[in-house]
Length: 383
Ligand code: X8Z
Ligand code: ZN
Image 1: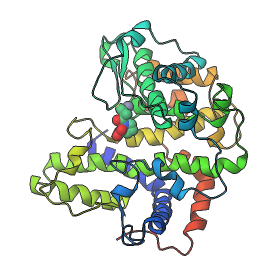
Image 2: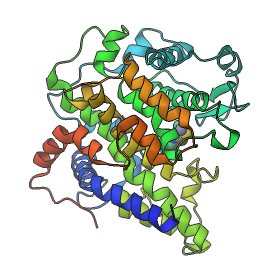
Image 3: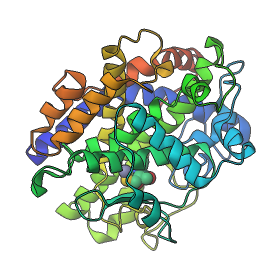
Image 4: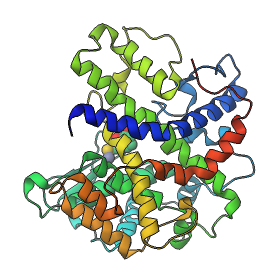
């Protein structure tokens, strides 16, 4: 795809989800302004980055308690469950492996377990050391729900690598890099209360009343991430093209943060500072639009796989756990590697040849309605 078409495709997807993001930003800002005071969080401006519960303000699930819908408590906290059971790091990875094998995929090779254990740079990543079955993950695991999800993300990379290992070397990669980032997240979307009951981590499923809470928790992670996932490369492309000269690097960064996220700097920033450098992928030179695409693709894969296996309830309660038809579709997509144009891979799994952000809107529809009600009378947007 020519670069300009690629940028336009990303914009098209962003336009589909921006109204939902704007409603979430508006609600979160209002609640944070009530909590911290209007002198800290201006109810008409961008949200200062330091009150969103994450170093980069890229995912906001840590402030769930401050913005949660009342009377929609999911009734369980996966972090508490894992910690109170004394679950170990290795057990968390074994549980995640169990999800993949339930789909008919192979067990991880012995070398995965014996060679993954050493002190490393903590930003999580997954590696295929020999372009064959020596796959390993590099991660410093904390016993909490966020890392449980990241483990599934990383194993998604490992299973993709195993899936295409018989292809010619040039084709041993995902259909496009969004697919590599999406695969494990598709599995993590199936870590539903019902699944937690199935594997014995939860005694019973919360009632349907809990759905708004579950959706909010997920939206604070996935919907909040979207503009962040988009803006990193907007900044990088402008730097590489020379449109943004070095003396404007930091100002351009905060201008994009404002424009896309409605997030602002907590204190005055100047060109003495280099805030983009605090994001691993910038000095690490890892392309970032892949994560934006992955956030779109994972909901599309989730929705379409759920539909393909005959599921009919709310999307946030659908789990493909133990479903070999879903596993077969994902395995077919992964086995293609990079040997076919990415629409072919998407078609193998979903039946569709286009990326489509309406799956996010479908997934979050009940929350979107609730946000609209909350925001009535509030002036949304920021200046
Ligand atoms: O870097 C990652 C993965 C490794 S590929 C842990 N992610 C992005 C980030 O942390 O900034 C996953 C979500 C976005
Ligand atoms: Zn990844």
